[in-house]
Length: 149
Image (tube, rainbow, N blue to C red; front, side):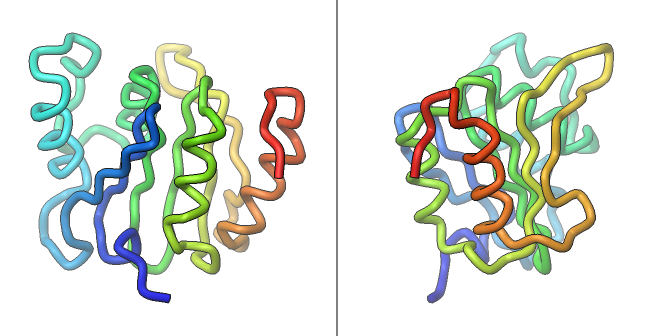
């Protein structure tokens, strides 16, 4: 299956389930630039993002976009990185499942904490798990949060 997510640099799923496909994976643009373009359009002048620059770590983008309720997926071509907000909902989980990235190698980051640096719990950190595998493990670990499949 061809997936728009697999040819996009960044994909954002907002808390209402709206999916934003941003940039082209073949662009020379940094992922941070693509994310900042979205942020300036969706959240102009929001101080939440004032410390971010195009060179900021992806974890920082995931954290701050997560504070607005967004799921963020960074496509690196041969693998992807997903950042879930603390309050990820069932609609977002369903939308992420529908991105068509089931067999892509993915690292999933969840339960973000700001300790002066951003820290996540992670699944698939060794780049050896597919999206289906990491999401299955995440959902199994977080059944108490109301997520079910």
